[in-house]
Length: 156
Image (cartoon, rainbow, N blue to C red; front, side, top):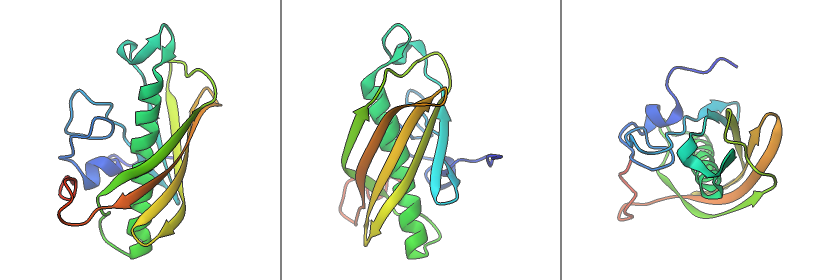
C-alpha cells in the first residue's frame, strides 16, 4: 500500500503535543497512522532509549504505541459513522494490553487497529503490534469523543 505523504495526525491534529502521536512533540514517539480501508496502520522504529533491556522494547512504550494508534482508529471510525469532515477529539476511556512476546527493538514495528464497535460517541478498537511478522502485543480499548468543557476538547 502506498502511503499518503501526510498521516492522520499531521492532517487533523498538526498542533497536537501528545507524547505518543503528537506531531508537535519533538520528544514524543510521533506515531504516524494512515487509514487503510476501515483499519488504521503505522510503522514505527524504536531507538535505544525506548528499551527495557538490551534488544527489547519497554512494555510502557508498547502500551503507548497501541493506545495512541487505537485512538486514531476510533476517531476516524467515529468521523465516518457521523459523516463528519473532520474527526472528533477522542480520549481513552479504557484499554487493555496483552504482552504476548518480547518486542525486539532492533527493527521496524507494525501497528494495526480497527474499530469493532461504534455506538454514539464511543468506539471499541482492537489492535496489534508486530515485529518481523510475529504479533508481540494486542490491545482492546474504548475511546470516547469529548464534549466542550473537557480539557482535551480543543487539543486538535
